[in-house]
Image 1: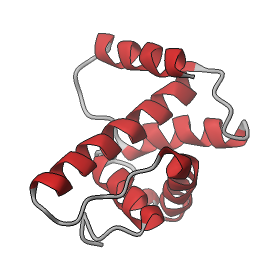
Image 2: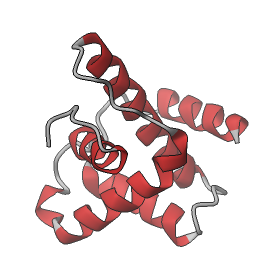
Image 3: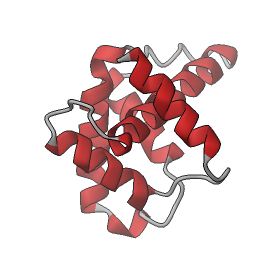
Image 4: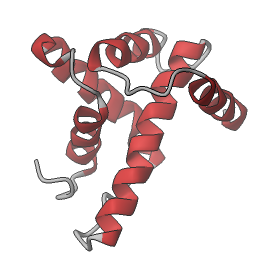
Length: 118
C-alpha cells in the first residue's frame, strides 16, 4: 500500500502543477469507491494521495493554530472519501472549484473535528 501511495505522489508531482477540481477528484474517487476501496489504478492512488495530503496539511494547520487538531486517522480515510462523493454527487455546481476545501470539510465531518470550521 505504501508503495502505491509513493507512486501516486510521484505521478502527481510529475504532472502539471495545478489544483485539481472537484469534478476530476470526484471521478477518481468514484472509481475507487466502485472498486470497494481497493486501489488498483492510478486514479485510485490519485484519490487516496489527495485526501492524505489535505489531511496532513489540515492536521498541521490546525495544530499550529491550536484549534484542537483534526484528529486525522487513516481508518477514517475511506469514510471521508465516501462522504466527499456523496456531497459532490448532490452538488455538481461545486465541481468547477478546487477540491481541497471540500476534502477538508469531509475529513472534518467524519473525524468530528472543529477544525476547519464547518
